[in-house]
Each structure stands twice: as structure tokens, then as C-alpha cells.
Length: 387
Image 1 (cartoon, rainbow, N blue to C red):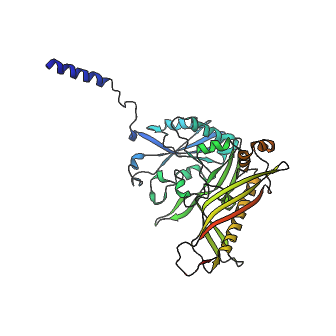
Image 2 (tube, rainbow, N blue to C red):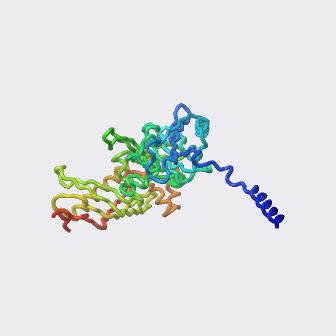
Image 3 (cartoon, rainbow, N blue to C red):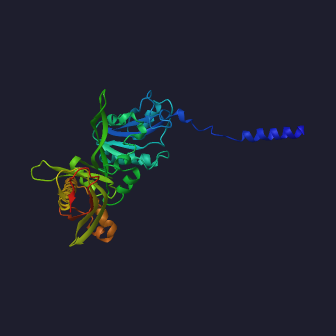
């Protein structure tokens, strides 16, 4: 019996030696985690910024530790982005993990002359990164944007650049774009992608100071070969109304000629259909929009006809304005070429020039707007919307 026990113990020890466990895996608290990357280009060199966070300060809550810095930014230069990253490696104390990287931010110079394409290719090929990385552009200093902390000192993991879909539920001004969508857009007609344009603003303040926050302020038009430019502010408003991804938006209309009475309405359940028409070797496009309108506050009596007329006219105006801003930089901002490509590839091949359909101000031949429903919201006063 004693010999049998010795044999069992010996066998258990021998099998234990065969268990390698996780000896080659770094402990989570002994790693740096990249959340965002900023890329600039100057004097023929890439300037790379790494935004790192410490998940030990986040733990099981959205609130960061009050004793920990929300983020830290590293910066290095290199002839390639890989060279710059390796220089940053040499200045760090711990191993870097890239699996939690959530966004890339490009400067204007970094998007010119195919510089951005090289950067995108690097992160697509790297085995630790994912395809669901958000892509942005800016004209503000990269480091200033990366150092912005979320409102109310929340964890950096809840920042707008890491979670853009959180705010598009309430205001779908610009559709967020990830690496996968960027690559698809650059490989399909019209071979252009509208990347969200980020600016810094100071709309918020605490008792101690005014705080800086990031804001979506338009788009930058990127192609495989070059960067075409920005469409900003009011000039970019039409993009929102030409996207099926729009969940909610607002539009303000003038009610009378005195320029004193305005009405702001919510736009919901937007449906967009674009019909290409080819005649005499020219392509034109008819646009049909359907959506609901919600009135949140108004004074006096309104008829549904007045609301429909004013809202439809303003949305048409914004669509045309954005389209014409794109034409100024030879950009197909609504990707009309792709609509023809999907519906009639033979006609597209016959008409296309350098991968897209030639566009003019007359290319959008019709914009029909159908408002399905007008809701007065929760009535608190006597004012009503009359039919």
C-alpha cells in the first residue's frame, strides 16, 4: 500500500512538470494599454502620439481613480510610423498592449500625399489591433485633443473619440467611421471617404475653470491618392440628411419674415433613397427622404402644412449647400457614383472618369421630402399644431 502511494505521488509530480501554465503571459497590471494614436507629418517625418491608460485605475467602474492621471501622451518622430513607435517603446517601463486601441486621429498634413494610407495599412496588418478602430481628422494640435478628459472627470474609456456612437443617438451630425468602413469606402466608387472632423471647444465649465471638450464639426474627404479638404460647420449639415444611419437630428427654421420667430424640430426615423437616371450619356439622381418630425417647443398656432413646408425647404437647402461644397473640391460627398454602380454597373463603366461619375450642380435633379408624421411632443400649453 505504501509503494502504491509513492507511485501515485510520483506520477502527480511528473504530470505537474508538464503543465506550462501561463508563464509567457504578462500580468495585466504590468502592461501599458494604448487607447488612441495621433499621427502628424512634418519635415518628411511621422510624428506619432500614443495615448495610454492604466486599466487598474478603471477597475470595475466608469469612474477613474482620483489619484491617477486620466491619460498620458507619448511622442516620437520617425521616417515611418513603425520607427516612431519603436522609439516610444524604448522610453517605456512596461510592455505595451494594443488590443484595446479604439481610435486614430490624423492631422491635415498626415492625410496628404498618401501618408494616411500607410498608417492605416500598418494597423490593419498588426495582429493585436482590431478593425473596429474609429478614424478622425483635425486641424487642432494632436496632443491637445488627446489630452482632453471626459466631462465630470469620467474614465478616459468613456471619451467621445472612443465611443462616438453614444452621442450619435441624440445628434447624428456626422457618421463615425472605423478602419473597416474606411478601407471599403476607399475601394468602392467613388473611392472617397468622409472622415469625422474634430475640433476643440469650451462650452463647459466647473466652479474652478472652463473645461475643454472635443466636438464633431464636419468631415474631411480622403482618397487613396490625396486629401481633398474639409467641409465644416453649416456647410456639412446636408451629410446628416443623406445618411440612413441618422438616428436623430435637429433643424431650425424661420417661421416669419421678421426673422424673430424660429422653430427647432427633431428629425427621427430618416429613410433615404437615391434613384440614378441615365439619359443621353449623363447621369442624374433623384433623392427621396422620409422621416418623422417632433416639435419640442413653439408659440402661437401652427398648421401641419406650414411645418412641412418650412422643414422640407430648409433640409433641401442644406443638402444642396453641402453637395455644392463638395463639388468645389471635386468630391462626391454623398457617394452618388456608388448608387449608379450598384444599380447599373454597365452604365457606370460607360460614364465613369477616374472611378466616379462626373458631377455638376444639376446632377441632383430632384429632392422629394415626405414627412410621415408630425408630433407636438408632450403638450404643456394651449398651443397646438392644426391640420
